[in-house]
Amino acid sequence: MTHSTTVLVVGGGVTGVGVARDLALRGVDVTLAEAGGLGGGTSGRSHGLLHSGARYAESDPEGAAECRAESTTVREIAGACVRETRGLFVQLSSDSADYFERKREACADVGIETEVVDGATAREAVPDLAPETERAMWVDDAVVYPSRLVAATAADAADAGARIHTHSPVVDATVTDGRVASVTVGGELDETVEPSVVVNATGAWAGDVAETFGVSVGMAPAKGVMVSVDYDGPHPVLNRCREPDDGDIVVPHAGETVLGTTSVPVSDPDDYEREQWEVDRSVTECAAMLPPVADADVVRTWWGVRPLYAPDEDGTDRRGISRGFTLLDHTRDGVDNAVSVVGGKLTTHRQMAETTTDHVCDRLGVDEDCVTADRQLPGADDPARLDEFVTRYDAHGETDSDVVAAAD
Image (cartoon, rainbow, N blue to C red; front, side, top):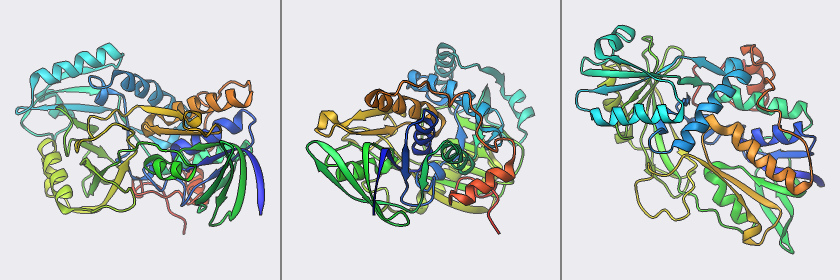
């Protein structure tokens, strides 16, 4: 069976559903195909941190500014997809005081509000914080529940007319005269789709999907472990205030605390080793900030793969690769109706989608403004309804499985 669509979005993570939502709300005919359940790749396997931007302030000020703006927008439109916690950057006695100052100054330059407190004041706010805490810095971090966010975004896209297909992998494509003429989609959809434009929004898998269209995308994926432990002591998001390293983020969930993470290059986002040393190191390093987690029972562990874009990357340490996003128009590669959106973060997914949709609409001659920053997601203030969307789109991810209700 064959059907035509104006835009085929490949990938049902948070960016892909964001693109489908934005396109549909501008009146564009759009079909989305996801190989598994929505958010089953990187989106549903993070630590669940909604970034204030402070983490990247000195290394990537542009990306930090994007996070600062978009974290505010996500809060406004996503309601119960977000839990307000604040964030605390912690300087231990072994950490560089100069780095702390660089972080603070960089945040000021970007426009990220901070409040510096001494160690004693920080421990009053977080009693289990390490005695070695010299000082700390409050920032506006929060916790996000990706399963709800992805599913509610898809629901809004569907309400606006988008066709959302889960468990429908792209298996082949035909490129004729420099255009993607058709895409064979298997699984539950099991159709040949004839698109005017294809958007590749498959994250760490973007290189594999791009090859189907006969183009190359230089992905440099890196795996990282998350360790959820049985600790519910009240605390904000904790960030170790040092150069990024293993085990420097602690994220509070409902009755559990998520410790992370490592950064290890992988060549295949579907096939990599899950190694015990990553778990052990994350627990040990996070316990330097919050000692009780060292003895807490491990409830669950999971790995995610970062969708890093670095076409010239040839080293083994991928921590320095920008977390910003890139939009690739494959006209430069000889395929003039395909684009890939790569890199980025969950926090900035809406902006990524807006930039991509602006580009696609320009190509299509569609003159409609983006409305996604001002339109609240359906069910935003109703957790039960959000969880119904999660079930509808099989969007249950590892990140928030301790929070999001599963269907009976």
